[in-house]
Image 1: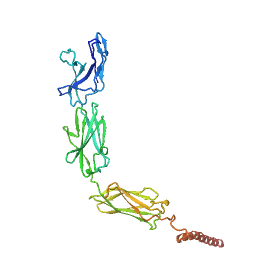
Image 2: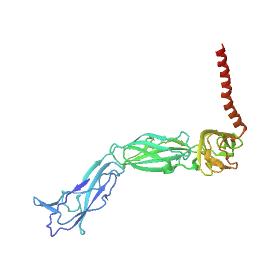
Image 3: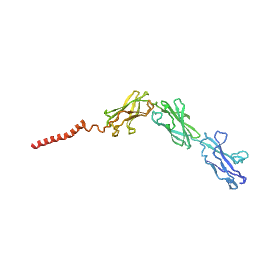
Image 4: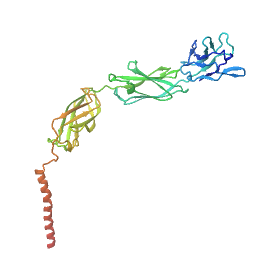
Length: 377
């Protein structure tokens, strides 16, 4: 903070209002420039007498707290510019001004900022929309506010994106999704990156060689697999479509790219009175050759689904040939209305009843004969 006092030898009736600005001449420059936002105003009655001298109390420009944006180090000269509307005055030796006026000279030094532990956090072979974070630690020995810029470079060495954050010493994170660094058109492309850190005087590059930027690898965006999904089908354990039976849901899948991928596939079912319910999820290996994948489910429906038609859907995290992330079908065979597996009067029921009734009878007869023989003996 820059502070000052003003001495005015004139009596109060001859004094005028003074407007005072601060001007600086930065290292390597020939001219002064104003650095305060608003002038300090000294009124005629702002002076106090001290030992026959009329001087103001201590004044300051609170908005001037540092010279961190000088752009260089070296000798900094500071002077005050004053005007009363008719005459201009400088605190430096100027014209016929008294010789005790002068400049404030400061030798500006700077410790360059530093950056450590630059890492790219995310999948090893990410898709363009996977969550990626560029993380680094920055430090400035002088405690300056830092402008940290992340530069994204394509495979031909051209900068394609950059973003800047104003931070203090500590961790800085650039989230690729937040800034929209990568798009679907970037699939299959390789990128690299570097940082520049500006403390207002020095601009440092990381990683660097003789302060010339080099790059760190990543991300290498993998090609978007294009799934081909078709022939959805369901096969019940029993052709009568009972709600308690097992159902084998299936679909055919292949990858239109010449490599295998592993993706999670989720099966969901919807009946007429119920919303989509997840019933199964498993990881599927999708190859360039079409292959049918099966999902055997024994709790797909409950008793309330009797008589209802149903639809089923497969969901997956990659786009298919229709640019969709799911495929579904409405099945035309409704679930059987029966509540029990057998009719109340049916051959299996009769056989079971006979078995239950005859078993105790036969056992009683056998036991009676066995005990009777024992008494005769």
